[in-house]
Image (cartoon, rainbow, N blue to C red):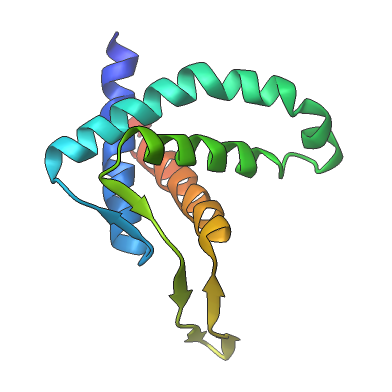
Length: 134
C-alpha cells in the first residue's frame, strides 16, 4: 500500500514535469488530475508492464532493451484513455543550438509524440526516484 501511494505521487509529479517540458502534453483539471493520472500510471506499471515485458522479451533481446520504450508508450497511451483530461498530441520541436551543436526543427506526429513523452516520463520518474533515495 505504501509503494502505491509513493508511486502515485512520483508519477503525478512526473506528469507535471512532462506537461511543463513537452508542448504536446496538455493536462487539464489541476492537482486531482495529476493524482488520478499518477494512480492510473502506477497501477498500470505495476500490473501491465510485467506482462508486456514477458510478451515482448524476444523483441527486447533483439533490440538490446530499446523496445521497452514502446511498452512504456503503450502504458502511457492506456493512461490517456483512462484519464481523458490527459491529452498528448503532435507537436513541433523548434530546434536548439548549444556550444556549436545544432539540432534542427523536428515535427512529431501523434505516435512519436507518445514515444517522446514516454521517454521523458521515464527520465522524470528515474530522476525523482533518484532524488528520493538520496
